[in-house]
Image 1 (cartoon, rainbow, N blue to C red):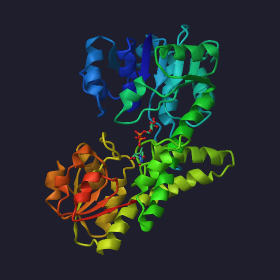
Image 2: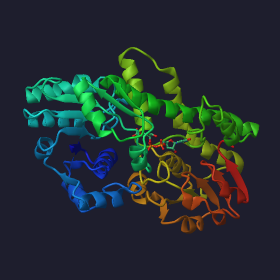
Image 3: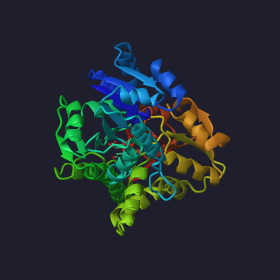
Image 4: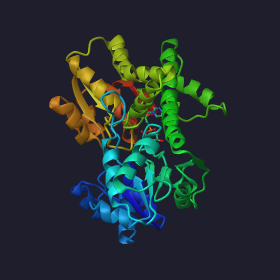
Length: 424
Ligand code: UGA
């Protein structure tokens, strides 16, 4: 099939490259010319494991190209995926400016050929049916369901394993406005070995939010258990093992520590809380999950202060800046809150990360001393905070003779002269 993918962030590019690798002809569209040029030259504008190699393969095979020309891309394909960003709005809602712009533009370019427009961006329930369709209809002067199709097909891609998650999903959810739209999208996943759920667009939108909200809540839950375990001298990871063996619970997403960051969990939970308020519901559990997550990173600092006293004037080595390993993404990373607080307390911060140094510099500025690797960083202080669990930091040699406060449970760090875990 000829597929148009609009937006070349990590969702759009991974979607485009994966569909192309399955033999479809994909045109990726972005308004940013530099991005488009980079993609056409085989350089993905984002870091994602395996993406560069796969992009080069599909470019060579002629299955993918990128362009800024939306009109030609839409008119040359049968199906368009909207994969543009939905950043947080000022009130914790989502900013749908890009979605609206794309909706209007696609509408202008629809012809008499039947075309299906698929929302892949994460949007609150009702957005596809009420906003997107209205924009498409008003600019195309055509009727959804009769002249063109519309569906919502959420993504469940984790940064760092996005390709693997795309090609081997737990499930596929397709929420079409009618059978024709649903089946056009379902056909793309025919070869996938995963259950495919057919729903309404708003149910598909809600499944995405429910999934991320559940996982975020699961993390806050285990952090809460961990915060209780710590003063009782109980290892929360042992508790999590016992908990996860219950088949009703499952062992994943039970790693306690500094809490969740990234571009999705914090934003999505806030957005669904906002949507709940619109329908006069006050979500108690979701608000609690967010509240606990706000304060969790600072517990590492409080733990250190309670054991060694004031951090004023002390050299602190921070291992890890990105919100999780395997990505250069700094969005909502616990490192931001931890380092800002350390600086406020007068500590001298020496930080390192295998991927996120550039991003961190932009956010944290030059008050922090940055190092390319942990070996160099660790020379600058005996006090070490572990903030992201990169494999590079799983090296006993780094910790010998050090005082370590661990936010991510790195086993190798336990050889330190003095070691404390946040929840264990
Ligand atoms: C998340 C979801 O896992 C994806 O399914 C979803 O598609 C994506 O959001 C999205 O909505 O686009 P991602 O943000 O890449 O993916 O990262 P995760 O691997 O889920 O981790 C999120 C955060 O939770 C990280 O900060 C991680 O350190 C933290 N986490 C995760 C824990 O603190 N404990 C755990 O046990 C697991």
